[in-house]
Length: 381
Image 1: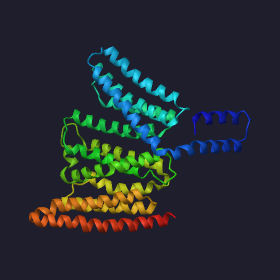
Image 2: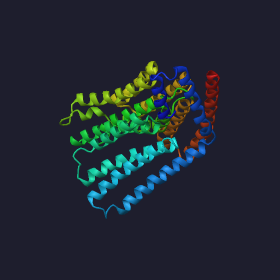
Image 3: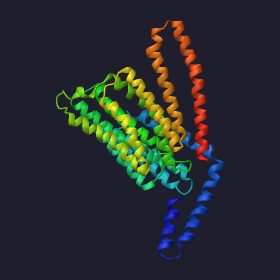
Image 4: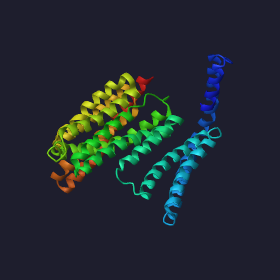
């Protein structure tokens, strides 16, 4: 629904020119008219917009990079500001003519804002506190989302806000000359918990685009973040940081609390009363930050988490959680065999066992996945 139409209807309602029932019928009619052509041309339109947006963004960056050295600082700053303004002005011009293109151009404008912030910092040598640049970028995305309410701005905000918090933690550790896996463990676990929250934002096929985008972000990030989380749980110990200068246990507790609390607050906003299942998932996440696991315990904990994700998907009728849980379980078994079993066998026996694991294990897991998917589909009906 176009914002302009909503504004007009609201004005007419306040002036008493129509009743609420008539306004709702107009909204429904215009909504159906707007959706009808988009369904027929959905994939061609999305493909053209995605490729066009990428090409325009890449071409702009290449043009700027090619002429950057020959520009004065004032010209560089003006060029950066012009990029942000032109993309957003183009988006405003296409709002009524082609809303999806307008959304893409506004997204490019917000991306250009981030580039402009850091390029301006480079031009004027503003390197005192680099996470401040990410904060400004996140505030720009928040302002754009508050005005436009489209899923691209919401997705950028969902990525930039936690990126700012993580960068603040990294900068805080760097200021105290703390490096290595001990400090990274808390940050990665916070990202993992937030990815799990984004994954569970999906409720049904009629979800708004922002929920779908968050589901994709969480699904794509969950396994890549889960693997280092489990590896660091077996190799690092954040409590070793407490003995260092200027690092107190309260600092670690606050960092851990803030990271996990952010995911719970977002889950509560997205899921309401169903946040209790996210709290239950937190019971699985927290030991990864507090306990140093043995390798065998890490494998068992990973398998338990994957089974829990499968059960969660069955409980709420979400196929993506079911598939991710089975994929994570298969990956856990593969890593366990490769790291713990294959090295103790001969080369030929190890490869033979690995092949059988792929064939038989993959067959059984696929049978299980199909059986559970059928059960899930039957429950949905």
